[in-house]
Structures are given as C-alpha cells and as structure tokens.
Image 1: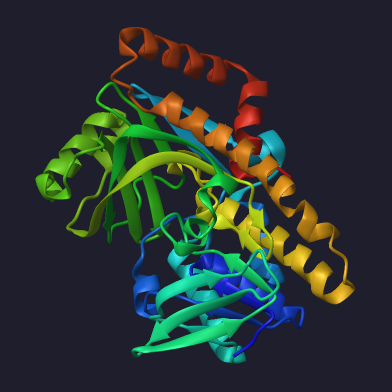
Image 2: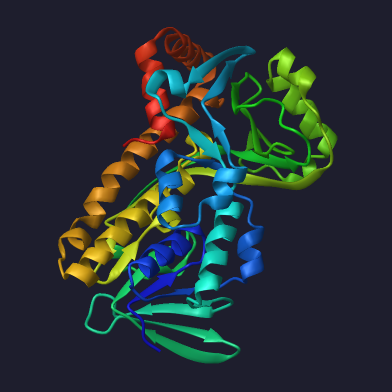
Length: 388
C-alpha cells in the first residue's frame, strides 16, 4: 500500500493533521496501535485557545463545539483563600473555550469516517524505516500479518511514549526535561461545576483546580506526591482535601458525588529538538510535554499540526520546500514560550517542599504583584489564551 503521508497516532493531533491534508487533496493514512474505543476513552484536556477553535473551524468539524462548548472570559486565582479574577475579555479582548479533548477527537473521528479516509486501528509492532533515505515506509502487524505502507512523509503524532521519537537515532536528538516531584490527582464527577470559570488555587497543603467538562460534569484536581497511589484516595478523602484547599465560599458551594473516573497524572516539562529528520516530522506530545497548569498541551499539539499541514500542503501542492525546511525552527519558538508559561504557572501555584518558607513567601509576593499590576495580568491573559 502507498500513500503520500503516513500519520502515526490517531489522537487529536494525528486526526487533525489528517483532516487538514484531506481537505487539501493530500492522501494520508493514520496508523494507531490502540482501538478507536480506547482512544475515545482517554480523559484529557478541556480548554481550547482561540487558535485551536479556529483550526476546528478550518477543518469543518466545529459545529458541535460551537453548540456545546463553554466560552470563558477569564479564570480565578486563589492564594490561601484570597481570590482574584483575571478578566481575559477586558484585558486583551479574547476568550478560551471549555470543550473536552475527547469531544474534539470524536468530531474528527466522525468526519474521517464519513469521508472514507483510512485509519488503521490496533496496529501492532509499528516500525518506521528509511525516513532519512529514499524510501520512507512504515511496517506494522495486524491480525498476525505484517503490512507495509510506503509514503513520502511520516508524521509522528503518537505521543510521548510512541515509536516515532524513539525511532530517531539518539545522537541526532537533544532533549530537555524537568520532572516535578508531584502529580495531579483528578476526579471526574457528574455534578454541576462549583463555579462558572476555572479556579486555580494555591494553598499551603498544595495546589487545587476546579474545572469542568460541561454544565453538568465537573473535573477537580489536587496536588499529590509523585509516588502517590490512586487506591489510597477514597472519594470522601478527595472531597475533604479539596475543600481544605479552596476559599470558604467555594468550599461551601461544592457539590460532590461518586467519582466516575479517578487518576493521577505526573507533571513533566519536556522538549525534543529538532523536530524534523529527513521525511519524519514530530508533532504534539511526541515532541514536547508541558505541565497541565497552563492548559497548553492540547493547544500546542493543534498549533504544531496546523503549521505542519501548511508546510506539507506547500510541499505537495506548490512543490516548495520552504515550509518543511522551516517547520522545526518555527514551532520550537512557540513551544518554548508555552513551556515557559506552563513552568511559571506551575511554580506560582504548587507547593515545592525543597523551597521551604522562603519559597512560599516568594510565591505570595508574585501573587500580590500579579493582583496589583495590570501589565502582569495582561501578560498572563495573553499567554493563557494563546500567543498570536
């Protein structure tokens, strides 16, 4: 079998890239090692920047997003119970939208299925070959039979643990990483959100976040040690701890219920450089990881594949290599800005045992400065809604 672009990974990055290429008349086959049901079952991010919303519009899959998504004009920050609202609309005239990554994935899957474009699920032993040579191709096993997919370009959109980045020779890749000594214990519950907008809370006991997926489904998080086990947290223990970290008014308004999903996500900052190796291009979590504090992971992935789609369209349609030659440098500039913002938000809002009382006083001073500085609030707002 032969195609123009082999896309590794059927998450939102791979699906979006496939959709954009399809609309430009470029053939792409997506190869995914998991089942479609498994991909849809993953609970992930839910805050879309305006750039991600625009990409959904461009892909022609935004109808449900505009009907069901929740436009947010700001966020709330809380420090030891003192709250301050960051008003995006007033500060910079832009907003974000709460629309779950699962829903975005479903919209893209449905569009791909309707068009008849090929996605190969449950592909075992995926291997990338000769991407720095004349005959790039991908092999995989399905139903015990080894298959080969020849292509001109391979797009690695298969996440942090995927085969794409692992296929790059170690000496050709430079990686930068910071692993944080804590994670987020998250609970999904079928109850109305405690507030209309997200609340990011710093407390001496640790960070907490009040978020949502819809008007009737909420997502809450508390900071826990990196080696914490989900089994140690009953629903009651989680709700009790969350209330302790929120301001009294929010804690009193919290509506609890049985968790329908509970998990711990480790926090890590990671960047790989460069992002192009001959015919292989890395995008999304295969290229970078950010802590979820700044709501950047999904949005960075969408930005990557938007740029990659433009570059590949320029290559296949206009026969110009300018876009693909500039891809790595262009997206890395944006990636590092997002890494900086996510690191800053994480540093402000979490407790770091190694910094002690001095570190907490610095965080307090940062919060007080932010609360009193219009320029600082504008900087936070423009980074949170996405740098243009």
